[in-house]
Length: 131
Image 1 (cartoon, rainbow, N blue to C red):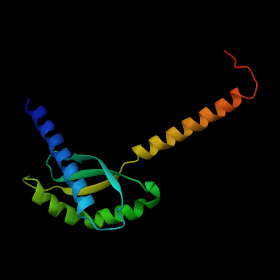
Image 2 (image 1 turned 90 degrees about the vertical axis):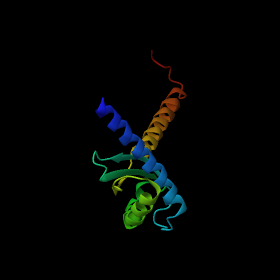
Image 3 (image 1 turned 180 degrees about the horizontal axis):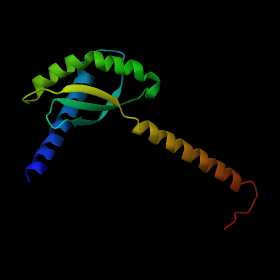
Image 4 (image 1 turned 135 degrees about the horizontal axis):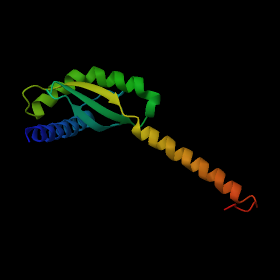
């Protein structure tokens, strides 16, 4: 039973870290390289020493190198500020990871739309649909 409790605590801590970091990035971070990003998830290691911070960017992967450089440059500041906002034995090291799921979803939607348009175009060409 202790395993379940520690797992749920880790999830709660990860969510709190995500919320606090999102607020810090949007209200305190002045680095223009970071721009408009959204924190999608935080995964905390079992010993709370490391946190993978998954993010998506409105700029997509085109500006990824610049966004990553800005986040890595700000990691120390963000960790310090995070330590002031949450009470943990140790504030985790922050590791930023680009979350491609939103971009992949948009790509798939675009492909589905294109396939549907091609299918509709074929249906309108006067050829009867075969069932």
